Length: 243
Ligand code: ATP
Image (tube, rainbow, N blue to C red; front, side):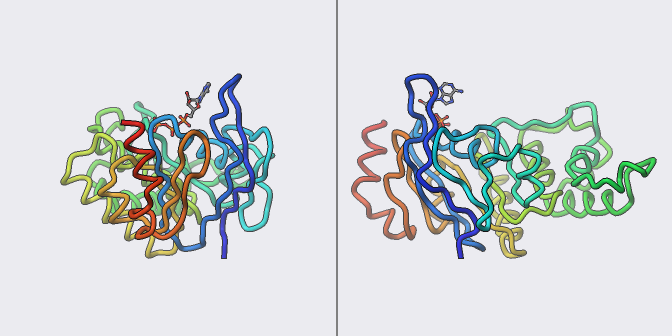
């Protein structure tokens, strides 16, 4: 069953059509890759799904419910979370606080004088999952680049999303950390979270993601099982053409 459905979505910036009549579906429980050469429209598509941008036309639905007219925080509350290409930690807060601030706010929380123990415990669990528990009380601004990527993953998991959009989780990450990140993604995936991952590292995409959606020049060039995508001549041409 499709968890997310993107139907005939278009988004222009002035004279540029960044996303041009794109349609695809994300199957519940899948680890779907979204690839394509620079400027293909992948980040714009992420921003459209997460509500940071609105489509000029078309529809985006999560479990049949229209997302494309909702604000990002409403979409987040429906179970969709994301990371960013450039990490966005709050440098003066601790690592733990950076995760806790992503807890969904309920009206009842506004009546409480301090952050609840349950939120702290869950944030600690997530920091443990990504190997950052020992840094919980350190200021987030002091983390290394790779550690900030891990923090971002933990923070994105705090609202317990059903669908997690990862924007270039491997960018600028050393091979040892990359292996660790792959392990964390697989573990979270096994716990029932559906993933949509934008990534330029083809080794990572081809080992982790199936199915794969390929965008080029704002359109969906190909989509399907990883094996078929790897053999698809149009996909190869799109990358060679962009090189
Ligand atoms: P990359 O892999 O390099 O991150 P991408 O596939 O994510 O690329 P987008 O960032 O979505 O591609 O960009 C798609 C097109 O839309 C590009 O031509 C880009 O210049 C243009 N674009 C994106 N955002 C804006 C904006 N805010 N204003 C104007 N043009 C934009």
